[in-house]
Image 1 (cartoon, rainbow, N blue to C red):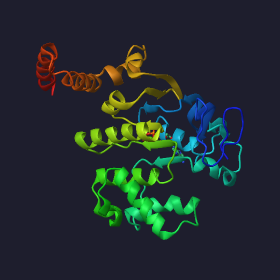
Image 2: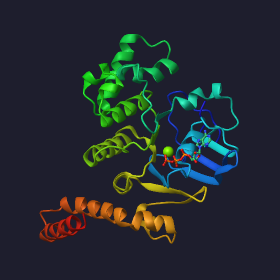
Image 3: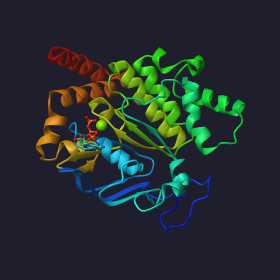
Image 4: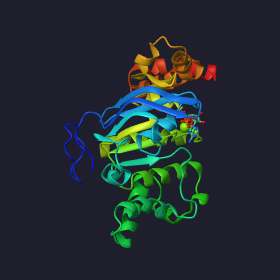
Length: 300
Ligand SMILES: Nc1ncnc2c1ncn2[C@@H]1O[C@H](COP(=O)(O)OP(=O)(O)OP(=O)(O)O)[C@@H](O)[C@H]1O
Ligand SMILES: [Mg+2]
């Protein structure tokens, strides 16, 4: 079972009240000669959307897999809801594992199951005695909660667009009413409008369901729009965890190139425009929006 920060076992329906649902200390991951993580530390705060960024191959997905117990680390400690994921028996971790949902990179839906059946997989795993009628009802509710039409429950993954597949994956991740949601590149491959809609949905779910979200992304708009803090993976470690404006002040080559490069600046301009548009009744804001619109379309 999960524990609070004093080591007290949490009841099945009791939410984690500690400050950090995820605590990673001294994490080392090696694959043969290759060291992916070396002495990596990270604390995720309850109720935040933590963005996780880093170059391709820096070990973001491996970090996520280590946290959820799919990748036993070479060294170090990982605690989720106060419970050690590194030196406990996986069969005893059911109380912890039913408290999170995961959307894997690429979606990872079962192709031979309908969307509804996909959502029911974790439900059947953790609650084998639920009736089929209730399973169908919960699946339908989660599908709608994820922004899909109710009839999508009967569709197979091959019948869905990329954006719909992501939402179906999200519906499955939400199946068990998680407190913690892991999203690995949820907006990759979506058009900007689809990506932005997915971001809004993530933020809405965080607010309404009180989720903590571990969000791996390359999407600068996502980082600016919805992340409370961002962890930067580089040099085999988390080299900084902070808000985007604070990270932009740091003197690190990769961070500067990423956030202050042309794409980073475009994302910042887009966010500034969004914020200004909310005050179009004020002449100064309307004027600034016009000027910024011209600048950003000139750049494009
Ligand atoms: N099971 C494994 N066995 C061997 N090497 C692995 C394994 N899993 C990951 N790696 C290696 O670890 C490194 C980090 O992989 P990971 O998938 O975490 O990168 P990432 O940061 O998620 O990259 P991307 O942004 O492209 O998704 C890569 O070099 C990868 O080849
Ligand atoms: Mg990855």
